[in-house]
Image (tube, rainbow, N blue to C red; front, top):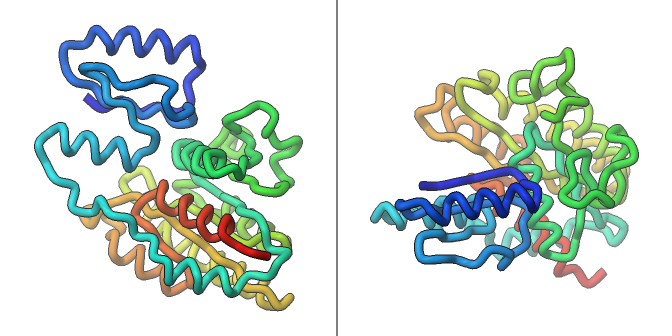
Length: 263
């Protein structure tokens, strides 16, 4: 059994752990946002810290082998992108279509000593005073109620995300724009294409002031999704994005890109 949750409250988390401790089947948990080591493994509970770890643990528990377990991050790519950035480009701005990958990205940055502000923060002191204005590292959940009341969800209509991507590109302190792209029946027919044009324009905005902007996208889907995984990856890469098939690795890429800089 694999149990994945957005950040639960501590009381709720304790109750859930009591319940699954009594479960007769082995359970893998992934409580996004929780601190490492908060809940140690037991005889029938394996705790994981991110969606990649959870997936790998579940496949192994079922007797399988995860064929894409290795990291897609390469030192060559990190060095290439790092060399393009100016000293004043310090921050990550995430524009996510939903909460799960946004929470995971916040966790990755927090664990690296780069805590991010958000409209749906892991810690209360990192709540944005206004969701319309980013500050320092900011990761937005644009599927939250404030963006979706009376409007289509961003997985269906990317227009608000496009506006925010272009807005973040105007900030000369931004080094990385972090995005997600979700495939499947609940998503638009061309989610990659919708944000690809914004990626191209965002890079143009940065270039006009003499900067380079790194755009990192995590894509969630399979080749049997009607949008086509490979086709969506190709569209995003042609727009100049660095694409990962893992939300964890895309956030980790942003961390590695910025944390090792000497300037």
